[in-house]
Image 1: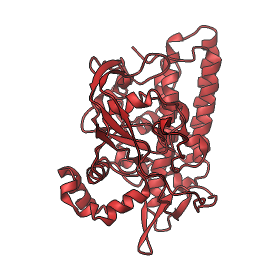
Image 2 (image 1 turned 180 degrees about the vertical axis):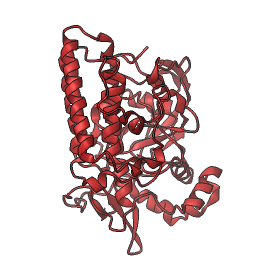
Image 3 (image 1 turned 45 degrees about the vertical axis):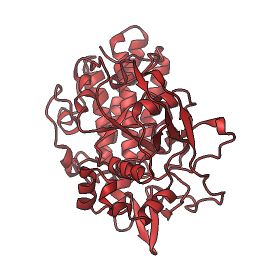
Length: 427
């Protein structure tokens, strides 16, 4: 069993394939060849590797089953990520050592894969290889995941430089004048039995299924994300120095890593500035705080007299909300302050986009979960250990990649993603 595919017509699939592949190269365009080879930590990968790996994915999982030969047999070893069923691979922490192939050769590889996949789609329009449609759909969504990783990984790499260079030629870095963020409010949700998981129409990853029922006690959900100003209050109240606020593993990580503020906060004149993809900018107290680990999010929630929502609580609320927000397509590539609510009935803001929201839920299989068959079965299921679920997408996530049932996951100490905090509490 492999993922379902919508839209079903091949021309629409071909158009989306072309647009998504083009957007990946657009994201890499501001970078020099030297930038594209940087790997700043084992969890991140060079931009050049992302460009090649997403092409290898189409070559190995779509073109090879159609009888196509590889562009270069060595690329299978260099650019396989974790697919044991397909073969051995170059070690992840050593991807930054791959000075060869060059960026130009990787771009030539991408162009060759693009040409061959489009030719395959033309043949599929005539009825050939109908079984590959769902794998092309999966490849498109896989590439969108790597688009976000290109942005977060290069941000981490550039942030490690003492020069704090900008990813792109920046626009104005001073936040526009506007009223201060409204005091944090709450939306209340009653007890009941609810269905969560992908409802079945359109694409979804295997970890979003099967749809199933959960019982929730009454709860409250914050009406916006936690802001930088609120994290500043946490810091001023010695939040990073109070072990009673922290999980044991989190306290150990904070001490070992020397955490005193979120990642990419830069000490400046007795306070903080923020490193962004546009370079160092003034800290805006009204914008959502991001680059927080699960441990920091949990400690902040405890300090605030609240908790993190479960993923079921988050999804039940988000399933009834419009899917709109600050995504990668906006070009901001940075969280923006919550819009002012028009009426109290507007419900929570920023459910989608801006910053991924840590939940209190461990990343585990849903009841009755079955991974996809074949190599793609390694996509999600084998990572269901030692990770926490995040929801909602971020300012670096492509809009068409997100839905209310989407389950992202990272280890609790991860900070380099655009990960933020939404509070919850018992009603």
